[in-house]
Amino acid sequence: MQSHDIEFIIQAEKTLAHAHLTMDIEAISNLLHQDYVIVQPGGKIETKADVLASYQMGNRHWDKAQVDQLDVKIYGSMARVLGVWQATGTNDGQAFDYQARFISIWISDGTSWKNISYSSAEISNLP
Image (tube, rainbow, N blue to C red; front, side, top):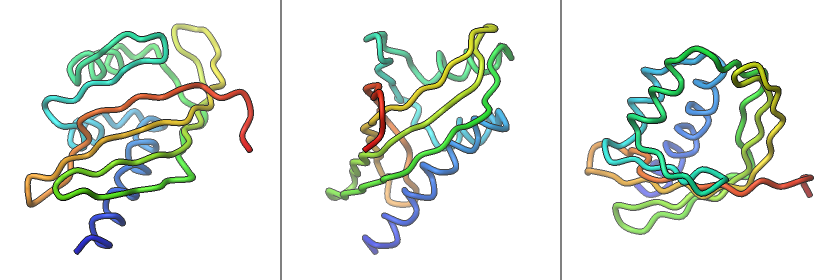
């Protein structure tokens, strides 16, 4: 069962990244736990509602959004993902080109996995 869970979480991370390209807010919402929090690179903490509201404003465009180098470890009903996030686009008319190492925490209720926490640190160049 654990290998199935790992594959699900890897695909869910990729689905979240792709949902940014299409601004599929429903897909993002469905994969985030109701208690989801993100620690933004500057230290600000945002909830699921904050994140979804920022996407619904429509002032963000993504040209690239992808994850790779995913390392998933499962500990009972919790999973830890380490990976690399790469994104380019514009936000409020300002261009961004962002690469980061991230940690993403997923929890299972026994039937599905939801992302409950995320944090990243920008990296200047990939190894």
